Image (cartoon, rainbow, N blue to C red):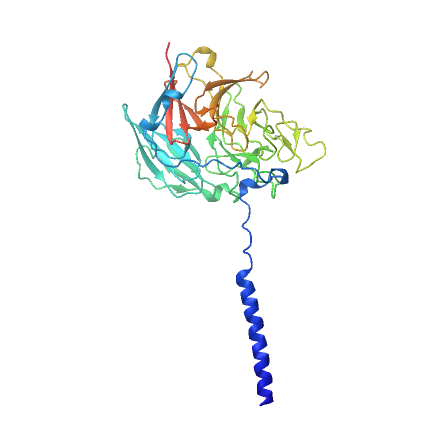
Length: 409
């Protein structure tokens, strides 16, 4: 009997202990969720900052709800709504038959825009991809590049239902998502140029395959790294005279309101280093990823585009509609800042420079998307596309619209 009581006492003690542990487990505070990727690199001195990425609208906006009359352009220029119904629309590629293909980032879609003369119609070519921002067109085929997928749609303009050719294996894509969405384009050499952004806001690169620009043969073979130290380019074009690649690049976040600048850069030869992660804007050492003589040997930018301005698409104007002084000028869409107390960007500017990238000037061209007084904005221009008649299309990612800019005396 005594043995039984001893066993009962032990069991009771164990039960109480287990109950206490269970109770403690139930009342223990849950583990804090990891900080979002956009906060990476935030110093303790900015821990209370309310700055955060600005959410996209990602729904269709009717033409009647777009305040196109607020857009300001130089005398003789006109902006009109050309297409709507493309939520999140970013980069644009022109097909051989005149159709336009538009990539997105967050929504996972690629759109096709058909021009019927008096109106434009929009359909979704492909959906549910991982940030398929990159679209390019060559020899009758649409190329779509997402973070983990490369698709080619042969003859799509004449056969809208064509099944894509999966080319992913040939391109050997890095897997990290941060800054790994693409802008892609075919160069004068017939190669497909592809950037691979840094997998962080600021960090020593985990592997050398990031923060670089590559080029490939159209089938994915012959990969060559042509530039390194490029944190995040999502726009480039080739100089009409020299055929050299010029590209935009985003500076890092959380270094204060005024540093570093986004940049426009010129790649005058293969193999140049543009500084990331230890040097920004060509002359600014990074305080976190330190390196002796951090900016030694770093290629200098053509132009500083403003801190955190989100410098996106770049397009050299080669048409005949605009006045002669615009020929050869580089247009740059600045989608607009979030990591800055006072907003900057939300416009299209011109970068006027000599062919060797010297004597650059940054001049406003298309403004009115933001109200300076109250810091509100209604649109975020992202990319330009020059049309065959010399007019220029501008995509607005915020409202999912495309505007046409034309000129008449």
